[in-house]
Length: 318
Ligand SMILES: Nc1ncnc2c1ncn2[C@@H]1O[C@H](COP(=O)(O)OP(=O)(O)O)[C@@H](O)[C@H]1O
Ligand SMILES: [Mg+2]
Image (cartoon, rainbow, N blue to C red; front, top):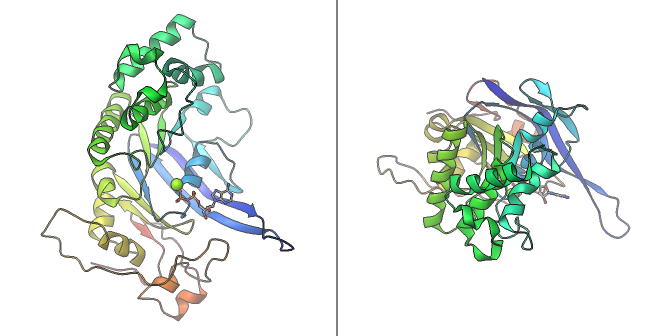
């Protein structure tokens, strides 16, 4: 069942051009169209600056898109008069477990704040009970309720951020690089917790990461972004075993995989990542692509409409 749909979402930022220069438009996202099915984990991957966090902020309504529409259960969430239920249905966990928790707030207050902001009418005692029980669900202790964030490790803080995100019983949780700031041993604990919580609460995840080896094990589908655009999307098997876009192939070739039966050539991308202030003509990837032909410099390739879709004039085949 389709739970979330993005229709042609774009986001421009106006950035100052500097002294006596006109302001410029930075295209952080261009024409993003995607669907997420209930209960699945869709990973979003791509190099730093490709627009992943911008997408996270737009889906969670922290920012408005410049263009396009978002539908939750088929209902536009940008429209006025959106119900309280829809507003709380999508929550987010950020990358930085140190910056995302207010150091002056007790854990209990951090967890209860979303309910108060969203005017969820529960009594003080019920709210506290819910917060203490949520602490247990994320592997902490009910007595941590009275402590402050500095008393916790990075992994524990991320558990607190996850508990806060779940306090409003969301249907979708956007995870923006939730383990990137953590030690390797802690990463797998948090990923296991996220998988358990997904089962327990039938959550749908948008999992943002730049680590393809994690994505391969954690997600059901993966979307690859480059300079604010989707270049490829498909199931984990489709994309990892049969990448269609040269950029995906290059990303995969740089990912260590434990399976010695998979032979791979190391592809070294040449050329700089272009600036989103001044994106290349035609296919945005053409200046780094070893397969580029003349048409790639002139004509922007369309994203296909298949289950395993890509945007390339010369898609790879097996
Ligand atoms: N508030 C903002 N103002 C101007 N530019 C921004 C803003 N937020 C993000 N950007 C730019 O948008 C692009 C995408 O950024 P971001 O979504 O943070 O990428 P990612 O999360 O993939 O690293 C980058 O070029 C970034 O510099
Ligand atoms: Mg980011």
